[in-house]
Image (cartoon, rainbow, N blue to C red):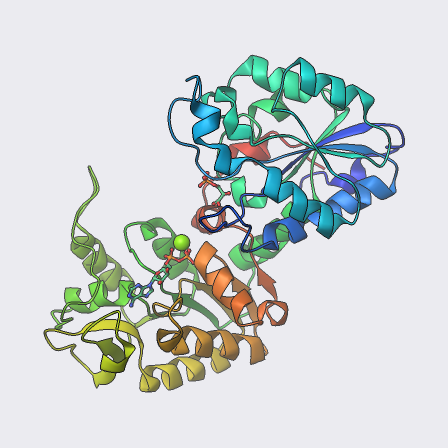
Length: 409
Ligand code: ADP
Ligand code: 3PG
Ligand code: MG
């Protein structure tokens, strides 16, 4: 059932709107924001609401604060995760003043909320600074819901979580309008088309580190696509499952509690994807990960003493060819250790092939989206999802509690 959006909110002049965004942006060790994509992605919703005369209370989590949130030194220990730096970038990008609240909830925050004027923006502190966010506390949710006349979920990247701000807050706001923002609406529209009626042939491209993180996604993808190309570190597990030598390449070995071993998972997936899965035929390998001058290309098996860091040139050509034949391409997971420039060729070549393809191209996953951005190719894709886990789980078919709390059209 399609969800109501901010366009269904009616007259907002003089009203306050509570907007849950996903400003969980990557930061470097000194706390500088290294990628603003998620901030930029929420701007259309926020600008629209401000343009029609609303005052905004904006809220997000940032990172995963450590320790017991009720402990006295919790805030001090996690001060790096304050929304302060995010507020600065948000202010610049929005081109309007943004007040940073003196906390998440409480009397001091309530006072600032009460004084908000139409067109003003208040950003609450990191939601995870309050124990109620993770414990899904009803009183905490009730207070947040009381801050506004309407609730907007524009946090696609967090839609797979059931934290208070995602589920209990809209639940507590029942009776008031509860809608999705333009970003969530767009993500859902594109992913729903992908899941229900994609132009064919449809190609999946899989890469990244671990198979165990993505089994559900891989199985779901295999049932939908006509072909799957595999690259990245996960390809070595599949090659090993076929009995091939992989040298000292990264390879998952440990089973998570109650799960099959990664090797068993890979064997099952290979069986399930018979006739659909294509694995790399050559590899860029190194003797020493830290010394790219030891890099060389090998075909077939990877000899002992070498570790795979990227797909090889023949694989690149093969994958480009497959991309050119597709009408829809879904891509998750880098083809190699792309953060190191000498090992980024395969990921870059796949990104370029997608950018130049006539196909509908959808990219998802934290590192994959980062790679595409870094190459300056994001604008050339049909869609680059702001979701990491949310993207994988939505494609897998997991129903999101957060969306169940939003009013149907
Ligand atoms: P995403 O966040 O897009 O879903 P993943 O988290 O699964 O992607 O994996 C991304 C990581 O996998 C990257 O940091 C990349 O360096 C790493 N990776 C990919 N291929 C290799 C490889 N051959 N050796 C080591 N690391 C790799
Ligand atoms: C993400 O980056 O995937 C979302 O912001 C959710 O963050 P979390 O994994 O810390 O819940
Ligand atoms: Mg990742």
